[in-house]
Amino acid sequence: MKRGLLGVSVLLAALSANVGRASDLPAAGEVHRSTMPLLGKPVPLPPGDWIVLGQGYGPVSGPSPGSYGAIGGVMLAQQRDGIVEAVILAHSNVLPVEAGWGPAGDCRNIGALYATGVRTRARNVACAYVVITPTSGATLAQLPAWAAGRAEAMRRGWQLPGAMAVAGVRAGDRRDVVDVRYAWAAEAAPARDGRTDIHRASTGPAAPLRLRARVLAPWVVRTMTEIENRIEDPLAPMADLPWPGAITRASEAPAGTSRWQRRLGQAVSNRAIQASLAAAVGFVVTGNPYTAGAIAAWHSLADGVGGHIVEFGWEWEGARPAMDFVADATLPAG
Image 1 (tube, rainbow, N blue to C red):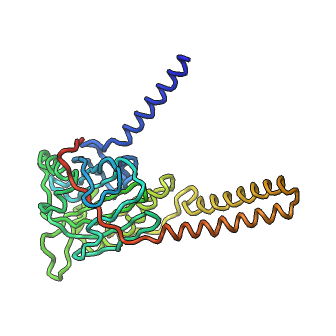
Image 2 (cartoon, one colour):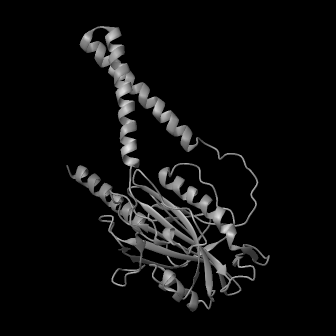
Image 3 (cartoon, rainbow, N blue to C red):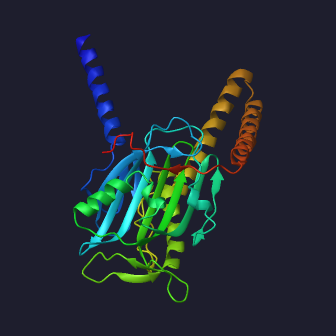
């Protein structure tokens, strides 16, 4: 009896430890490459070393999606000679919800340089946008980790740019959401031809590159798809994000089974198992193999039609109100 109680205690302690680790934010000073885990969700990163400058928690500004605990935020940066060239502000929810999430307010910003529009399906949401914003404005200042990250940058003697080009992504399913703003130093005023330049950070000894902000449009669409794939299937092969404006050559498909191959295999296996069980039960009840086959065929047909009706019902959604994430000084940071 004592051994049983000891085993249960050890199991509960292990589960508690795992939950604690999953709910922790990356600590200031950590360096991440390629991917950063955030509250149990993987966040893809552009190339190079990204150092965590600050972290914080905050609430949803707008209609509540339910009991989500809090929104955790992290600020990462890349710098060169004391000048911050790139910033990432990543956010996610601590607790899962049941009714899904709304889009970011900037996804419907009519003044955005680029926006994909908001896509909702079966309680999933996805949208992306590109905006130019001053670092001293409220757009960035209201985010959970911005104040802590900016203070840490000042402590290190790093200078933030006056304006940043923000490539934002919001993607989530009915339970969890990932909101990431990838930002690069931008000209405070548009160039003479009316097109704003951004200064892409450098990962090596070469000087940073100057690019048109329009290169962020195709890049943010690709990034949105990558984040969606990681939320939908965390076990799928992960692709590294390229630099904005980078010309990438076609490469071989990642090793392992793709997400669609696994889905097809699961669907075929599920249908075969269900049909076999229905035929077996029908034969036991009726003793007639033809009747059993007819029952199995009817079951497969009804199940398929019913499944499509349910999917159609899930996809029949109206527009959702925006849900932005803001800092809350009453919530613990760090």
